[in-house]
Image 1 (spheres, helix red, strand yellow):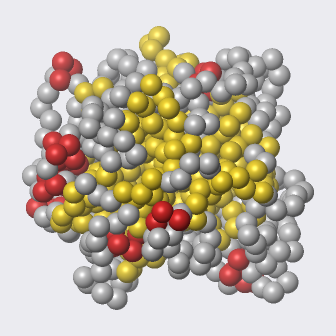
Image 2 (cartoon, rainbow, N blue to C red; image 1 turned 60 degrees about the vertical axis):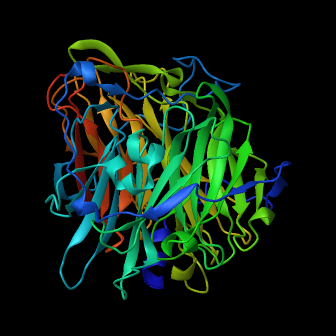
Length: 563
């Protein structure tokens, strides 16, 4: 992005919260735990693995346990007595986003919920082919950007078959796929980009995490395979989330887990870093983890765009600590001396406008033609914590979202809240843009909003920002008259602070889910690294009313011309 363009686009947004002094940080008292993979090897080509098949009946359905978290100390009632002060109760101006393409992803495969998420790769300038990799519970698929399936869908566990053990025999779920845009292409040379695929190793002890890193930018090829124990083989490392953090010194993959002793008793969260350099080279990469006991639901920072974090910048983890604050940890990974890595809580917590969790963290999302209400997962931040560094795009004078700073680092994230009595919806999407204009970074809320413009419930969101500072939110939408649908909203830097524009329906729902309340678990909104402007989103929906035959949709759009 050219400096003049950045200046023009960011000039219209005012800072709504003043920047306080740099934050203090309090080191976690106990030392981090350093470990290495319990096993590692190389996979066959993904395209050569056996095709995925499921020819079962409802009796064969594999229902993955709900990822639980403890209650917040300031937990609000299901229907708060006052309206959310960040509430956007009317739709914003329609910017007419350009919808590029939409197609069906992986469908029901014998597991529920779907856990749909995607990663998007660079489009090859010579062949014109760009890949999208989608993972759901138990399966993986590779598409081109026109929606063509590039190989038959594969079982996820078959990717780790050469490792043996739980990774090879269990499709334990909670998969995540990432695209490391700044990684060298490896064997092919000259290109960029690698794919990271990960899922749980088991739902019973011994517990583990399975990680695969592609050897080239071709997602249908070979992968470096790893299996790790996260702190203790008796700790279920539930609801893992991964982020790309490619600093020049100590580049890492960041990860978060919710820990359950013997699979039942919640004992805190694990914040982890993995040696990216070693994983890309198929070496025994160190895992450095810190257990924190102040709740769970943490997300790792995840890079968007071509500008990496500073050479020695710490990695970040974020959760909401109370119903009016976000809690941040940071890590200084030191892979040459892993035991000297440090994790620290950023003090004070980041204040936000008070909120009530959607459905009190449980299930209350209505659907047409059924009494079955859907799960909100309103007790946690929703994937991803999308990070972007605009500093190198700004001129000497600076213009960072209305400030004069030449340091400009920002993150966007969301969760599901109850918008309060002004509207009849039980759930809306609360979103935040955090901003740091200092070195070392100190993040504060630049703007925040709760998108609940009518009686339709919106939840299960994912947020991202493009190179021009446009923010998009993807989410599920449902009500007593609207079948669960896949939708998105968007804003420009010149849009009024805390507000979103109109709504784009990527996939209208065709039916309700009748068998279970579990829904989605998470979704993923990505920015195409080729133009750094196109948003890609995937989420779950039903083509017709059913107890378990879900579908997924994948769609792309760009934000239209901004005022």
